[in-house]
Length: 274
Image 1: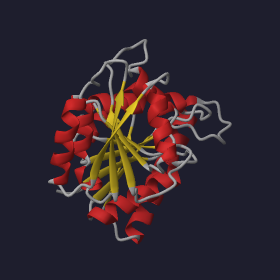
Image 2 (image 1 turned 180 degrees about the horizontal axis):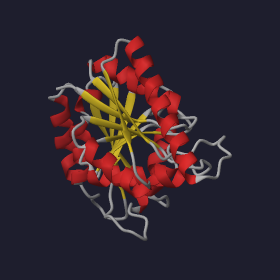
Image 3 (image 1 turned 30 degrees about the vertical axis):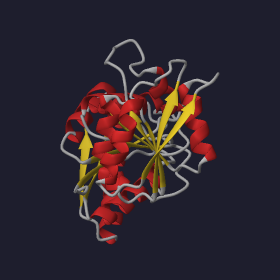
């Protein structure tokens, strides 16, 4: 099993370069075809023009320039590459990208930076692609990733279908990680949800040559996101695997508390499926 088709989102943010470099690393590792996709509707930060038609034309040209540079760099690195541009407003871009993503093994997106002018678009894209693509999403933090390729992964295990899809969607990556910790967070109940399935998960992953071990911890007075973030920091984890939860809503945040907190507080790359 291997990744053969990887999709990476491109924009004009500061995190774009590291996301592209990570995508190149993954594409070369798995000899995968890499497709870069970008919206045409990202207004350049330096643009002072107010005429809507002129802004649209300049924004589209900037999008084509991003894709052309991405293709040039990929081909120079002997990577099989394709490029796509998506037209439409924020809502249309999100839906179209989710549809495109359904035919890829892995989708690489960025964490939304609240200080970025395109925060709303990036956040909407993240939500919609996670919920509607049916594919594992590799979220890169805007602060960067301290180690690529990843060496130590943490699975936030609760026995749910969402985290199960995340795990099985990225088995090629887990097979190459040196160590995988399956974290089971115990709450006030005697038995945490999914805890009884954790041992079976270890056995299953070992049959896929994944070096996995269980770590059971008590939440105590902390909430689950805090426990997970603390464990990442204390154990030099460089990849978090978890489920993404929620239902589409026009007026509300669609993610559950754990998902939303970890997406906004991301300190390492996070892989999620819904």
